[in-house]
Image: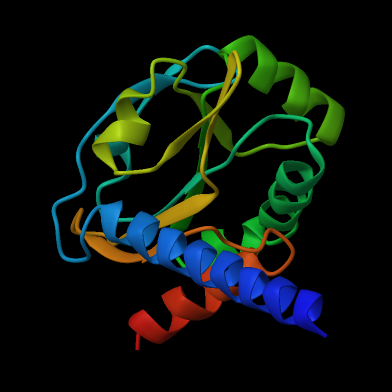
Length: 180
């Protein structure tokens, strides 16, 4: 009985710590209402892509950990599936990870992705938007976060540590609500 009590108390501490870490992470993201920092990064076709190119459009700037991993593939496929809905809402989807443009090219080819994936190996944009970088030994990964930028260039909404299975639908619903 005593062991179970210690185990239960430990489990509560772990859950509470994870909850605090998630809240702390969300607080680090760029603030809603802020002007979105401009940037220029190479895409999978090595062409430079700048945020300023999309003035007048909604921009879904989603950060993800790693090309060709399960959650990232699911999230990318869902954005790809909904791409026509985003276009109908005057929105573009831009994915950002710490991977290289070459890695993005391979990922897009393998998974038939047609939207832009941007390479940020020096995490300049990741840092500018307050996205946490996790160190896993020699590997570094960006947290799975999304920043919604409105047509005037301001941060309209942020999401921290999103569920890749349902996130695209959530973003679409948010844009639809904000356009009302």
